[in-house]
Length: 197
Image 1 (cartoon, helix red, strand yellow):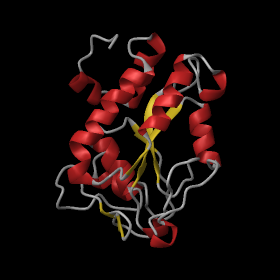
Image 2 (image 1 turned 90 degrees about the vertical axis):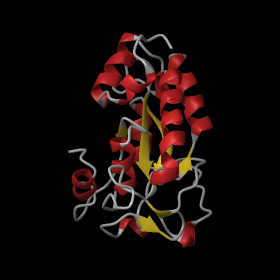
Image 3 (image 1 turned 180 degrees about the horizontal axis):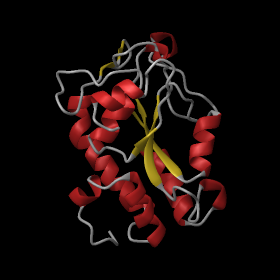
């Protein structure tokens, strides 16, 4: 790692801090991915926040960013290689997308949706899909495909919903940013339950 910042200290930094370190070359996207992957492996057994992971896809994108490919959010892009999660309601090309429903349990889209395309074009690296209630309908995060997501502050409690997997992933330091969606509190409830407001 280029940075003098130890692994644990990186986990305590904000997304803004991490983007600054990336921009200054203090850490590379690939190095940062390894920190994220390690944290996910350490914590997600108890949380179940990020049940679908796309680590190899993320590594390939990080290599393209490090190679300066402007179409992949290379250096100079807004996020510059920031590892993030997206809610399992959003299509990511080549990555299982279930919408939290057994009807779509084996669905693998051929192309990413607009939100994911915009995130990636601005330098976000998608590392995983966050758990959600079926079709995002509910104030608690559980479904018949992946089960229940735990709150990182007390895993016997729920992180709220419907963006509970995203909030739990950020609160536990698995990723520095996570996409969610909100119609009736689906971002606000998990953010408050997981203390990421």
